[in-house]
Amino acid sequence: MTSENCDSFEVNSGQVSATHVAVLGLGYVGCVSAACLANLGYRVTGVDRDENKVANVMSGIAPFYETGLEPLIRDNVAAGRLRASTSINDIADADVAFVCVGTPSEKNGNLGLEQLRRALHEVRDSLSERTKPLVLAIRSTVFPGTCEETVIPLFRDYPFVSVVSNPEFLREGVAIKDFLEPSLIVVGGEDFDSVERVASLYVPLQVPPCLVSLRTAEMIKYACNAFHAVKVSFANEIGALSARLNVDPGEVMSTLCEDKKLNISPAYLKPGFAFGGSCLPKDLRALNYRASRLDLRLPLLESALLSNQQHLQRAIDAILDLPARKLGVFGLAFKENTDDLRESPVVTLLEQLIGKGREVRVFDPHIQLDSIYGSNRNFILQQIPHIGRLLDDSLAQTLSWCDHLVITQKLRFDLALQVKEAGVSTTDLVGTSLAYTALPAPALAV
Ligand SMILES: NC(=O)c1ccc[n+]([C@@H]2O[C@H](COP(=O)([O-])OP(=O)(O)OC[C@H]3O[C@@H](n4cnc5c(N)ncnc54)[C@H](O)[C@@H]3O)[C@@H](O)[C@H]2O)c1
Image (cartoon, rainbow, N blue to C red):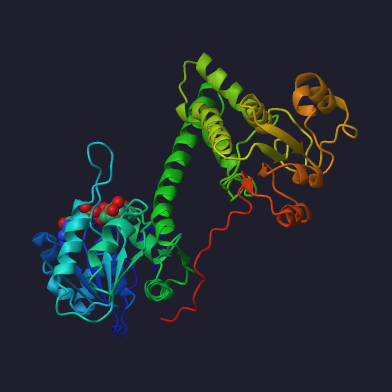
């Protein structure tokens, strides 16, 4: 491929692959996918109900402006790898059909599935003569569960059709570059051969695909877009506050991005327990207070503490729903490997459990009344003596007493082993033992 700012991309002058790929919907995603897949060497048929789009593609014209798209369409149509049609019957011998139709918002914000349902009905109606396997790869953005609840049931009587989710992450304006140099390839499904079939189409891009469950693949697209929206809003709120404080917003954010260990990294991006401690809540409160004094609304930053409280309350409600009466709690400090109790969410959790009449015992490997000293000892004895009285000296003591263990901190290996051996049921708030299993990565062949 040529450089980032150039609007032409190297055209494949090689052979046409035996694989026939159909692309349903020739909008931004479908047209770019069709042109790029053709350029990778596959025989591609794009189908759209819009006659103008189809005529444009067949004449080598891009149906909308996208950098580098037109020459890619023109050259791949000329090479016989790409064609377009308004008839679903033209995909009769396709091996894989990428569904790229629109899923616009309904008035209430819900996702509109009308185009998807209609396109799938058309595919189903075209299958009467078919026996050859067909993998339907849903590339349109759809809510988790859509493939299971809306797509798969339509093909129940067609066992040769399988369904995978293959969300698209391209950005308009740099869509071809994003397709050919993807930041992420995700293929989700329950049928391993079909997942592998779709993933193998991307082998020439040399980016290892993430093979996940069907619902995870659907969810990842939403998680990515939500993350991007939150990033933009975060940068804008920090920028707005910085500007009001006579601090250079660009310098703040570019310096923040220099930290690849804690800031631009997987750190703090694992679903787990609520945050606490001596810094995060205090500093968020200070930022929000100062912003409000400047008449500056920062809804994202204001909502972080609220979000944290809600997360803690969900955990408390889930524990209160348990039939267990004698609850053991592992961890009292706000995180592992510290005895710092300041703003530990576990204190709030314990107070609510006690208040609702649960019997509770607590063990924290770093908080033993006879060995801690200074401010933490005073805090326990003076501020939370009712919790200090609940502390056990060992995990074994807690485990032998409780009928359910709530884990609020990451367990050391030896302690995790003790919990396993005790056979006590657990609620793992840090999510360390939650076993989400992804499909194993296949050895891909082109
Ligand atoms: N645009 C983006 O940047 C982007 C990026 C990633 C994912 N997505 C998602 O991809 C999907 C498609 O987005 P888009 O921007 O390409 O939409 P779009 O509206 O540009 O294109 C949809 C195309 O589908 C066609 N179509 C509708 N029903 C059809 C049918 N029954 N048979 C054949 N063609 C049919 C329409 O005529 C249209 O050309 C959406 O779910 C979107 O959320 C979009």
